[in-house]
Image (cartoon, rainbow, N blue to C red; front, side, top):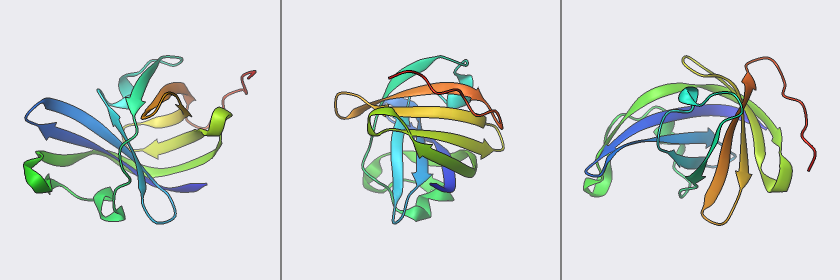
Length: 130
């Protein structure tokens, strides 16, 4: 699996969060993060909700969000490559302007997934025992 990715800074009435979007076949798999993933230390993880898939137009969109749901700006973007991970998740290497490195996304209790920063870019992380 490979494609484009974007991280949007999404300002709402409730505050700022970040949406990680990974290009899939017809849409963008989207996860809501409390902070940008480059702030995570190697080995650090957090629970993030998986949101509904977004249209591919959001890869480059900046501006107001419909329904009075705030506004977004691009925080980072680039390409990624990935592979299936444990439990139906993904391991992806992001190659962006700000973030270059491996992340693991592992499904947890719906709608949450575990996001973990694995390794710097171009160094494929070692497999962990299941």
